[in-house]
Amino acid sequence: MNIGIIEQMIENPGVPTRAPSVALFTVDTADRYKLDSNGFRTDTEAVNNIYINKRQSVINGFFTRIALTEFNMPWNVPNVNPRNNTFTVGSLNTALNPSPIQATVSIATGFYTADELAIALETALDAAMVALGSDYPASYPWVVSFDTTSGKFTVEAGGATFTLVPKNNGPRDDLLTMMGFGGLSITADLVNPYETYVSGVASMLYTPYFDVVSKQLTKKQQVNDSGTSYATGSSLLARIYLTPNNLTTTDFTNQLGTAPFTIFREFIIPKQIYWDTKEFINVIDLSLVDYKGNILYETPNTINATSFEVGTGNANWQLTLQVSEI
Image (cartoon, rainbow, N blue to C red; front, side):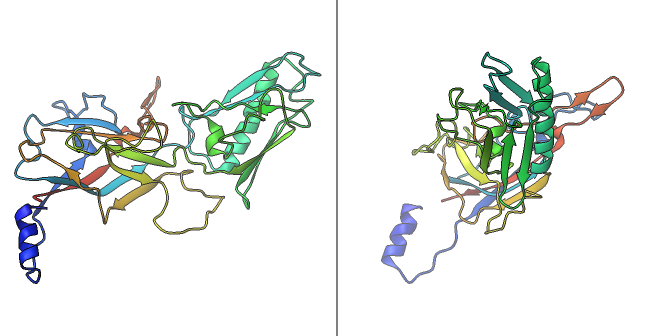
């Protein structure tokens, strides 16, 4: 706050002061498009990692604070996508296959309920065992099921012992995390297999939150953002959790993230970002970063011989920034 205003409040505590003057700066990711004379796009810029340069200052005047006050986004990110769509099992019954084995299956990109994912995973595991050239799945058919009361998955291999092998360290992820098998202990290794695995409560979310990041708008901060993660939590405008703002009971037949939805957040007490009054803002850089530190997944356009399928790059999001004089 301005020093003169503070001194005035101390000297005259009964005198009301006016709220600071503010301006609004609005951003629509559709404004990143570069169009030719016929209206077709000529750029290939991703929707979740944008850089807008209008070749002139976009925010100018005397201001010392910037704050994100509104965020609106159509969530069209499939909960199963190339960032997390693998599932690895290992060390199946040595009676049929004396050499330790691992099999990794991949699930097609898409929105899946827990029941739909269980069916797809069971089918993929059976097919993978056949490909290994052993007696599977006839001798040891896979059973993957989901309990809509407890919200937990069960994975079995018809009496065979096996292990779940995590492939989700560092920036990588796999289906174990969203299915509730994240953080398996060292006992779940190739030396100590089990006949049955039961998960914790499955989130069915590709990411539990995402960060709205801007290195440009936070570059004047004198205290850096930080967090417990090495991959996320820096240069933040806000962190948005994929959950309603109040307490709700989870419907395990229709969990959040298993179908498209819309996010709207109004930040009643937004983060106030310091800005130096001597510099205008000339460019806007904005990124949406998932919990692994990767840019939020975007489904690409699919081009076939006779069809063109538009990806999620047209699912533009918007935000409102408040620019304050004090």
